[in-house]
Amino acid sequence: MKELIEMIAKALVDNPEQVNVREVVGEQTTVLELRVAQSDLGKIIGKQGRTARAIRTLLGAAGMKLRKRFVLEILE
Amino acid sequence: MNTDLREQIRETAAQICSCMKFTVAVEIGEDEEGFLVVFSGKDSEFLLQKNGDVLNSLEYVLNRIFSDRLKKDLKITTDANDFRRIRREELCLIAEKASEKVGNYGTTINLQAMPPHERRIIHMALKDNPKVKTVSEGMGEDRKVIIMPSR
Image (tube, rainbow over all chains, first blue to last red; front, side, top):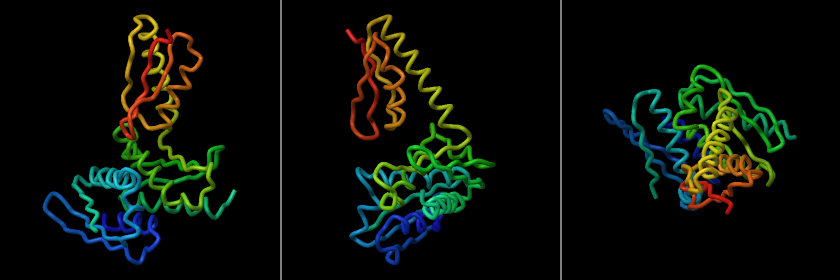
């Protein structure tokens, strides 16, 4: 699922070269830590967090098919 | 319209789905509102979970990604398995049933929270009904249509 977050984040931001995703794989849950340039944080989060919520919904749907849980953390 | 942009949108939608491990076919067309991205095939039903929440999220993300390149009055719409048409019929039915109740008993009905285009369908379905009037209330994702007696 790392590719999904990487792909969407790179398409959204102004500085795609600064997009970095780290995958922390757990037994049930996988945490995806996303780092972007400070100036791009707003693009990832969106108005009232709508973009972040939409990305999390997509992640949830992908997890449903694989029967796994994915959590997106956006790090500053 | 711009065929380059069209192919880019299709490509991006297909890429997102393949990253999600969804086996779907992606077609793109143009309508009066902008671009229409249609998903079909084996895994398209995964996009329709939670009353189309996943499909709407995909639509939102695509619009954010291409917002700079789309003209102001254009937008990307998504569909799968004829969901938009079926949902429209469902919403019209909800509107009709609720307006009957409001008309007969003079009560006010709050519908569940809906995204803008779904609220619009409710408003449009009831705009010529003299017995009721409709307003939207609430903020953001919680915004819902309220149907009340017109007097």
